[in-house]
Image 1 (spheres, rainbow, N blue to C red):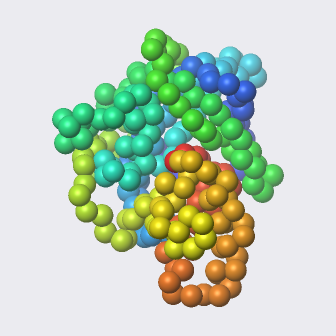
Image 2 (cartoon, helix red, strand yellow; image 1 turned 60 degrees about the vertical axis):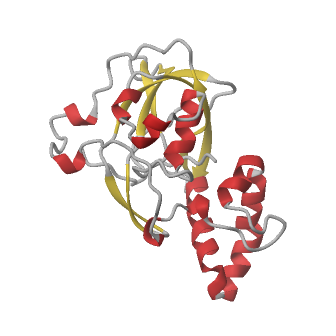
Image 3 (cartoon, rainbow, N blue to C red; image 1 turned 30 degrees about the horizontal axis):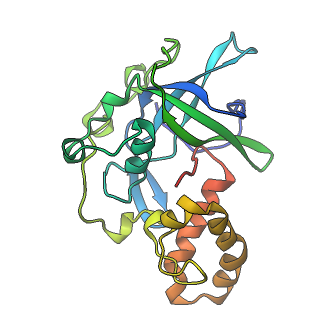
Length: 243
């Protein structure tokens, strides 16, 4: 199956939740190249089936896709941050050396779902997650991408192990690693700000970004590109944003 970020159609978003709901990881998507503000990156996503059912679709359970993850356990990587939330602990030294994403299949989670709206479309995002002591049993109605008849079955598309990385080129720099050089959060990365004050990141997008784009200063380029990507994630699509 070829993944796409195209919007529209009859896709029905997962309902918003007022509290945590039970869920289970049912798939890891193949790596897919995606163009970002920092160049082309390879990403995969987790597919999570929840306990919420769609009464208009034979009471089938909803599935929700995580944001895209690069296959690296660098300290600033999104997957490393989310694995800590999913597992309720830091990764061990052995897991940091090599983590097999297949071990996530069947893992129970508790998640909260929020909606984002753009161009008259509604998109469901995972706002937070934590481990569930007793895993929700998969319904069995979701078929993994690698097992579908139209899936590309070659080594390049297979889910891969995630390994720690000591270096990261600028072309695949994660937006969360960009250091803010203005305002009260000067010297902190976007990840560091977002972990304690997501409103601070939103304020940068709404108040600083338009003026910076208009000014066109070279020293602002990295932060402008990072905030543009964050703004796109907040606006919707299949991505969700968590710090």
